[in-house]
Length: 331
Image (cartoon, rainbow, N blue to C red; front, side, top):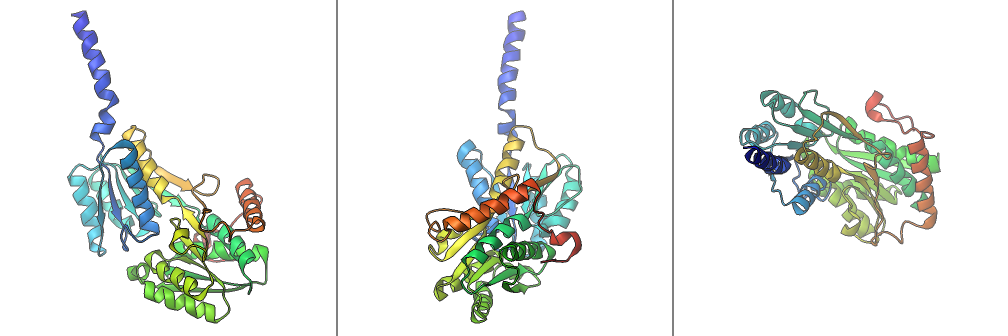
């Protein structure tokens, strides 16, 4: 009898060790623009693929085509037993809030929005800090001392990128010229590369020689315009340096890939947590991309200035203004 109990206990431990991996059924719902936007959504896709590659655990995903599908996709995944379910983008906020309340035993995560439900992890980033570094690099690389920004949807989150970028540029040259444009006011602003191209070219015509975008798929047009004009672009979210080697100064990495990977991994290990998950320079949640595609552009002088700014921000010596705090940009 004793031997049987011991054997049962061992079997129970073995089963428990694999329980989380066996039970986890991750899912991702992307925002408008799709998982191959080469930017924000694709960063999430990259993180999910890394989890699949490292663990062998399959995940499901869905690319919405309209706003009505947000709630539908989340609810369908929850009904099918998927757990955790990650929504990519602030626009999923209301849908996550509603569906998470309907499925209290399912773990949810959302990127770029805070949802106050007990079963939701709200993943937010200090985009202003990474954008500040991009501004430092842009100002130092600019020959005309005029830099530009093209945003996607005109919302406080994207103004946060713009303001941080301007702050970094003006930390190098307080008198640097700046031109900023937003693409639109609805979801189509994330997937309009033609308009991105037009806005970038209009800025170049006014003297800008380095342009930073935070516009999702629209940014593809911004970076193409910079390459065509022989000027410099700065990518965002994913490492976009390889899209036009030699004409993309750097990319401001927003580690949505790590956020997705970590959320899946935590769920697998039974360590999924809720509430705020804040990612800035100190947490290595944002930063600049350096690789073989831009190493000649990012000179030693630029790298030194960027590293100094990073250290000053992490230490608290420099505080980068968060536009979303008061709807203003002091730079």
